Image (cartoon, rainbow, N blue to C red; front, top):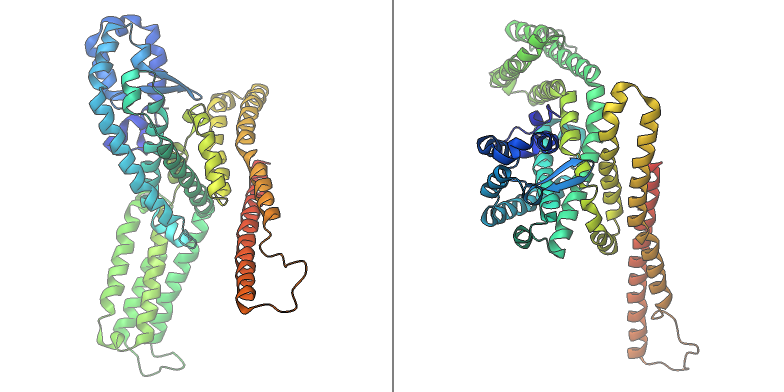
Length: 460
């Protein structure tokens, strides 16, 4: 609750980082009614810090409260929230989040292209990926929660159209997909961080040893390249690489500087005459520098990154808000069968609602209560999933009905003894178009069935 804000370093994300505290504060203020009624300065400070850009607050497992309505009978609270939340500010906030979401979704599409998310890409672009997920999730949270307001004036300002619902859902699905793929790559990298770093360190040190042997003149194929200065230079780099360590915070703090020094030395030595005239040595130096960069990226991986993803990906606040998006989910399935994979990732993201009520119960060690609470919320999650996925069989049978009515490729019952070239050409065109249509429809069925199978595996 109190450590979530460290995962939101930007000032514009402050209310999202403090959202858990804001939910508790909303409840606690009802036990201090005098503050709500007459402490105008305290309420102004509270609103500016916690509710300056979000007046619909999620306070417990998807339950939300509209502060414009709930604080209407408390003078100090009403004045504070009324000064901060007006029609013009809400319109500006909505336009800003829509623009951010559009920019984030374009970047999400680029990251989700086949072959982009590799281990090297994720390890080198982790800060950028975390920033993208943070930006997308904060805008999605605002656009999911705030339009559910009960205030007539604000509801008219921030009303979400059907088209906008589909855009928000599309961004939510893409965000869930990226989170799932990034976690799938980061988790083994973080767990094997020490072993991977030692392997890369050994390879980099061996590369320096090979270069030192080469310039010692003892190489079997190159006995005329002896250069004692270069040999000593690469031996010293080998020793510096072998001395690198991750054992303490001091070593970690100095690691980036030491690796940068070695990398700079390798870059400068490439301009030496005896080195620059040998392409194979230049290529070897380039590979050694890449090993150093991979060492540095591997050392920077930590559990904090996974914690940031878990925090910004939390969707428990939208437990009830997503009920209004079932129709949009059905439309998404109908227009894009491959989106079943995205819905699978969305269901896994929504499963974060199971962690919120179980966190304190597990800390207390009460397994019996943990089982009861888990079963209750699991049943609700499964019911929501069924209500969405039941559209898939309906879509499949609709596609099968379309296949059954395709008769353009059926040959006539009896061919005439003579047929004109134009008639034969017309039949061939109809047959070809029908085959293409059959292929498209069967592909849609295959994508839907594969999505169901993958979803079942994930849930079970």
